[in-house]
Image (cartoon, rainbow, N blue to C red):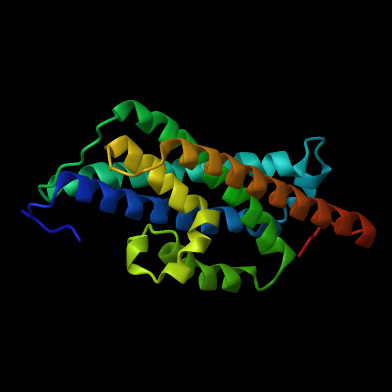
Length: 219
């Protein structure tokens, strides 16, 4: 961890800050996006959203994008200010990669947010499931601890988590050895596409249920 006046290696500091920033982005996006439609139900505005000609999935994706952008801006600001205030320096060998890294992070957050916005409505227990999944995802993604500290048989799930590849992409920008930039970009694209497809399927099922039951309150 970072401490005031420490002499942590800049690459180690960058790795630590990147991991914690991604964790905060992911968790903040899940909860803010997950509560999007629940707030609409609470305030009685969900029916008006569904009555609009615009597909609800596009509306939710836009709201998730806003939530992700807010979380990304806050986590970036904290990541820039706190290490500097404690006397630590961030190091990026390839700063030009920071922009695509931020774009990947934002698109990934939007996909995750869209998916969880639907799941939080589809199931009363979605919130509890999300709580239960947070720590295992943080641990298995390598964002909280290096994957090398895990048993070899427990490392394979990280290949399925976009958090792991977002971190790999950011570490490639920092110049970390053995960070597969192209592999990270390719797997991120697949993960994001899968999350958007899952979110589309969830909302399709919700809208179908609403039409079948004649109710616009999906929960």
